[in-house]
Amino acid sequence: MDNRSLFLAQWSSIAQRYLTLVQETSITFWPTVQDLSEQVLHLAREILSKAIPELASSSIAIATTGSDSRLEKCGLGSPVELIVITPEKPVNSEQQTIIETINCLCSTYSSFFCPLIEHKGLAQERVSYYQEKSLIPTRAFDALLLVGNQDTFRLYKEKLWQELKKTNLNPFKKEFLQRARKELNRGALSDPSKGEIKYHKKGGRGAKHDILRVVQYSIALKIFSQVPQEQFAQIPQTVVGRISWLQQNKHITLAEQECQTLLKNYTETSIWYAQLNALAHQYPEQDVVILTVCPKNLYKIKEMTKEITKKITGN
Image: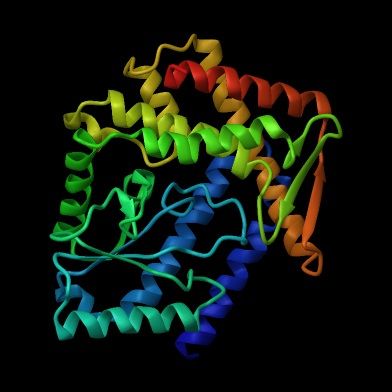
């Protein structure tokens, strides 16, 4: 069996398991999601390592970010994003060949990898920015090494923390957290009056782009502003782990019931998002799919998310 056929067999098996996420309870959901996320990461590492064996002796590091790196991939709608990290730009001919091969892999495995890769040259570029245009420190914060040079990846992370010390995070807060809060207030994606959560295949995705994003960005901002550098290595990779860790280390001052409510609501919303992903896969011809939930429960989760995250960020 060739590499492409082997990939299709493995990916098909993982995809089938993703469609059964709708059967998970709040107790079994995260262990199952994290197990599936690990399988996706293992498959990504296998593809990259087999196609580019010279990575083992290269200074290049290849990382992923987003839900894959946070081990909370809830469905098949988002491909694996790749961040290629090199010590400098421009790269030498050997590194350029590797990067070209990565681009080819993203085309070959277009259902699995995102077609656009992010390339960071550590000596020339800010890692807290995306394409040197938008301040998005969460991309580097969430990043997880897939294959390649561990020292290069360590320097990438260290540079992020150095940048955060002297970076005004208000543009990030305004563009991303406030935008997610506006979406949460607007209710176009998650509408409690109807008990509907909408998944637009070419646009906004309910549960994710309003409720989950508000929690993710609030927690990240708290970490960036509150956690001392010597504790950075202790921060968990998952959002639910980060919430518990911040509470245990007294970086947030929520009542125990508030912390448990936030964790419970984040889990329930993630289950809804997994169900939306399953619906989108089930009805590929539909541009918009709608999940119907208990209106009262959706209203409560949205209101508690607003209230508790504002306590975390201070406003």
